[in-house]
Length: 489
Ligand SMILES: Cc1ncc(COP(=O)(O)O)c(C=O)c1O
Image: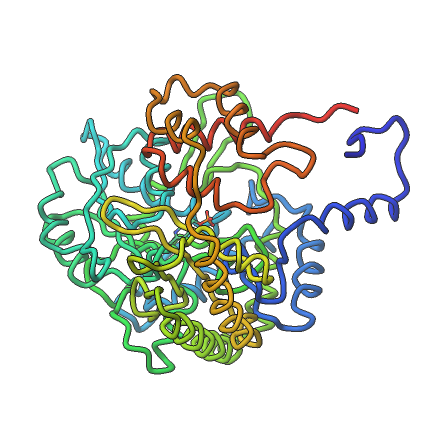
């Protein structure tokens, strides 16, 4: 790696060439072959527009909207568009809806939890109720904010929580009930109406995490999809998060957190006047924030437009159907849930292929999927986030999947070295120091000349899947810690 602070500045073109060379090691962000992390509408010229808009507003600082009214205007327009899409605004059942642009889904969820917590200063030990399929960011919010998380199980057949279990989990200290539309892992929309009803009956806020699906489900419904209501038309829903950097296809760095009315939002803000510096009021976690992502999102929405999003949703829906049919056509695989949103998630039947080996075989055929570990009584699975750019490749994927399953059956399941297995299942998490993890990684062929990860990930995934949760978390922390070391020339 080049020195980030060379003695003399380097010519611009040379630096851009270096960046291009570095980017070649990355997974493909465009072209519909990566089924996680990226959202690609496959629209020519959109990136150029978004990048130009980003560059125009990158130096603007959202810290003070009165100094930069351009940003305030764009943020309010984005919030208005999101509110309208999600059943709020003039003439709706949520006419007083308000909101903010945040940096992403995680920040939106942290702020939803903060607003709920700070609305009840008298509750000493606040708690939130979240189905186990709720995004990990709720757990992060709970830990960051000192709130207890009461996890509610889901039915292993439907992957949905029961309203009765939500009721049972609500206590006098509960400040928020959460649900998802849909939950990321399997793409299942929770029974929002029933959950919001019991939350309202208990006098508790109900947040709908529509970070993943909030920009596409309304269009799928317009196209006739049979999806349960999940937006502000549902009584009892007090806040909704929707990420623009997912199905609104905006560049990374924008999500929206909506509240049904300004009173619900007020405790989300942080204001501080008790220091000698500038008076401080922030809607979100960061103080200084670039106008780049907001301008890029604004440009993206205006370029695609309502009709464009409807078309993209139709393309995505057709791709989802074709991918789900491909999975159902392969013996030994089964869908975790009907593919009713934009996720196709499948697992292996008993006697079916090893899923982690299968994921490697798909990678070898140019399709990058997302393996998910088993959880309680839910089996390990392979997750596909489907975006519009996937559509041209569905037939190729079907062939690759059938071939990959055949190859995975021939290879058989991953055999973890006995000593490695003993280490991860037998150790106390506190004993998993950086040195132990480095030795483990070395034993699995990681961190050598070929880079931090082995070419085939099955062994790593099998290890993580075998490890108890506390050990898995320690392994991940220590391993990332090993990767994130400064380089010195
Ligand atoms: C349902 C859901 N909520 C929250 C998040 C977190 O979003 P982000 O990665 O933008 O912080 C995700 C991310 O995939 C998600 O799918």
